[in-house]
Amino acid sequence: MLTNASVTTMLPVVDMARARAFYEGCLGLQPGGLKADGKFVYVIGDSTLALFPKPEGTKADHTAISFKVPDIAASIAELKSTGVVFEDYDFPGLKTIDHVCVLGAEKAAWFKDSEGNYLCLHEDIA
Image (cartoon, rainbow, N blue to C red; front, side):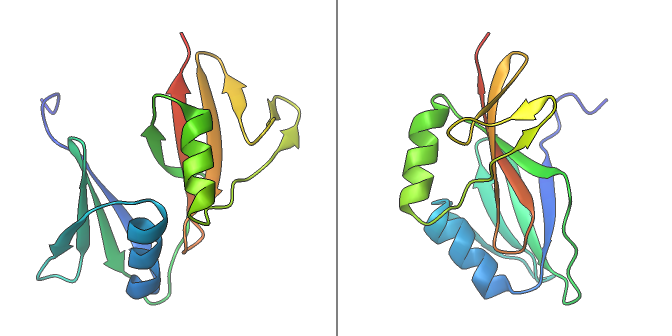
């Protein structure tokens, strides 16, 4: 029933100006505009990201968004040049090397947005 539906990811933000600065300045997303209900949207490929104001804030302790990229190392380098700080892990079953972890048929790297949400880059390797 929803196979051909477009998807909007909704992320709460405490500080819309700070969040927009991160998503536009660090990630390079092009502004889609402010909606009447206060959401600010970005169109990313066939998907939409909507930031919505939530003064008390909430943040996910899991990956909220994952961006599929063709070259994870190049994407990491580009994002680091804009100030993005990548996470590093050394847990049983999850170890990063140069910020990258191989998980089955993909490589992945995580970073936090301005509101503390975990975002991810992933590259298919199979």
